[in-house]
Amino acid sequence: MATMNDAEIAHSSIRFSLGLETTNDDINQVMTVLPKVVKRLQGISTVKIGVENER
Image (cartoon, rainbow, N blue to C red; front, side, top):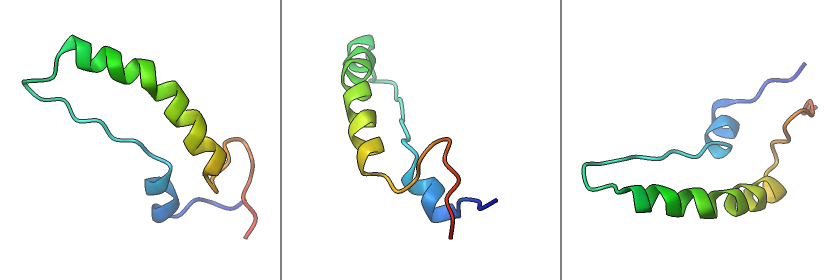
């Protein structure tokens, strides 16, 4: 069974940072846009969920 290396893990991650000035509207906007962005990124990713990557 192949495992992902650190670069693959980093490239298959999204990080969010919240600050004191982050508003509920900011979070709601992200939650509105995020599903479309994730779907697009999944389409171009070399990491496939549920599929063992052979090397």
